[in-house]
Length: 395
Image (tube, rainbow, N blue to C red; front, side):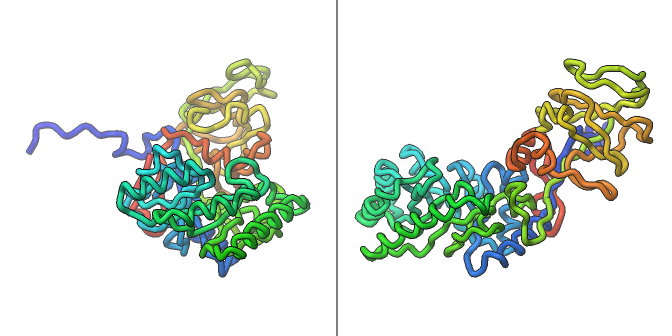
């Protein structure tokens, strides 16, 4: 027998974590299944960019594919490479045109790029020829009014013909992106769709009929907007969050992510005591104040306490007291029972109460996308649900 036992590590003891996120992969699967049913017969592209909206790209991608997604979507080349390195072989769409210097990596890892510039198309064709991998599939992205990326409506036919003229490329899809699909009352979406349909008609007249046409995002799928065509690109909704307060989901969605911590210290302070940086919070009465090791470096917005942010302790809501600091925040417990090491729920359910990323977003004047993607890299993610053992944990 060895004379000494090995020293335990933090990974050996989940209780040692200061703050952690729990991801329910069964919720992801259920959300994808419900959204697929609404999108049918269109195919389903699961958007897993930005580390799966903060949920973990690889586990979420696998869960979405389990539930019937046929495509995955990423924003950056390295995100596609990550999926391939994890052994995922499903089609991956790169949602922005890669720089010519990144074209070789796109082709080497079998990522399908969107294109919209002459230089981008030429760069991909050259890289495909150099790699001997021709033809490679590309999707043409048309700017119908978002004015972020994409070729103009007037240039769409020329760009499609440029692709067709290159033996190294094959035009597999045509797409656009909607700017205000989360507002059913705004006529701009209908204008964008009309412009897009005009582009499709122009292509059809010259015999260009790509097998995949796609427009709809989460807001378009959940709202009254059309634009489903043959493929839908779904991000925030598959994580169980509505795309905005203006969209009331017609299908049941379950938030997949919870954010949790534990009380490390409790102090009793007198009425009028002022807390945290700037002394912006004043105790309304003598009471107990808990310190929680979760801060803005973990993704808890610095001003959340100033706009009415709360946490759950023993199934009750309590206000965040003052400014959230980099590594810690304080909670006004009043005279409620609590002890050090009690679990604190920042996002998620506890007892009969729930705090959502959408609630944070509404208080802060932002959107839930920013909340979940802002959860810091140092926050470990743990996974539960069927096949969770395949992805035990990602940090």
